[in-house]
Length: 422
Ligand SMILES: [Zn+2]
Image (cartoon, rainbow, N blue to C red; front, side, top):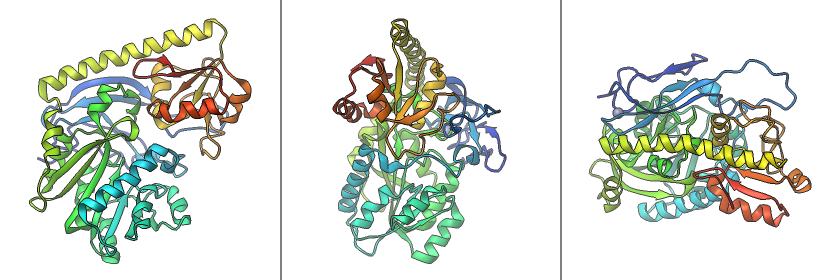
């Protein structure tokens, strides 16, 4: 059954509660976690702006026992969460760049892509993913609603600046032909009406075309206590089970699924029209390892307790530094840091500033919901604060050696899953 009430916040300039499951329409949903109220993660005011009214939204996670989807209890107007000045470009993280390069190698080999094949990437950002297909000699097209599409076009990656939907899909098909591959990395969780998105994808897809999605993985989120990835951009937190349920509603069949390292643990799922390709054993393997029903309810309760404890543990670590008069700064300001800052209650009295590498569009702004400034990283090597908390803790292995090599001598801390000094 399709949801009878789709929470449509687009165009409202506000938010709309999710009253039934976004995939299967089941109601009522069960409350899995509450993080109280949060500001939109991209609401980063310029340093020195006179404080003015800003919106905050309830941030609750719900569980659907029918299709296993874990989802946000509120849809916020995309205009609020993806402002045109959206300060994010995916090309910045080495881990992501490597993952997209690997996605090309894996998929082009598995699918036997030829030069004429069209590859379309939905939510293509600065074109990092699809540039791999372009370098491989294939025809490509990116679709990206924000101004980041201008960066992509400037780099020679053809990109349509539009919100993806069925109308755009039809246009793409008329102008470029059907797509052999449609990719959607980390935006499959973002768009309100997921059924319209899947319909749009099918509209563009060649009869034997393949849809590849990459999404943050619910099971990894629970395991690694990544509650900081819960924010209003992410309406849905997928398992292989819930993605399969969604795609099957549209006649698509998942034929390969596997874990990938992006964002601290994601899944790459391959699907095609039912019966087109043999289903690989990876699908059953992943499904068998996922909790369902009562096992999932228990897993979610454990997660809820651990999230609360992790907040208190981080307070303890910070208090120890502060009681000795230590200064604390933050390393990197990813979107996920906004949830952690506001849930834990970090403010400018605790964190002096947050560092981003030169060129980041976040420099000169404040962390969402706070007056903590984001500054260029070189400052911390001069200041040498006693403690630096890595808020991109999922890539701490990449960041810590770089900070040491640049001369930082203080204590490096990762805040999750258990706060600890490296
Ligand atoms: Zn459901």
